[in-house]
Image (cartoon, rainbow, N blue to C red; front, side):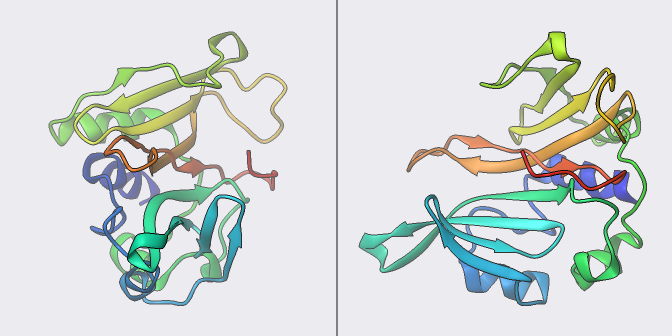
Length: 187
């Protein structure tokens, strides 16, 4: 059911309806768990729930945190049951196996959305990496077009899907990292 999960994230711009409007406490309540790890970085507060990583910026004027983005992370190797928030398992079943682009593309189109190619700051078509975006939600999907020299990857595997807001603007960038075959360092 990994493909349906990714289709839902791409077409809704959220995880089970959760998006950039939630506070750190609301994310914990929505996912039904405390984060596996949480801490402040140079960029703000990061809450790591295993498959879902949420980012917040300090909002001095509001006296707390404002949502900055989230990433569905499957790039850490095959997820264990401890990596999957129970609410995701209840809705989607076991989230395992390679996330292949074609079934996700077909699901997005069947839901009435389109995908368009786009270029991002680190795009490199010559390196075998393609990027697509769902215009209605601005969810981006990064696909490994050629897995040459990438141990554990297969052609056509999704590598990312997530959502980020740039500064205080309503610009959203969505990318979730999807990878099950072997551990790698986050990019």
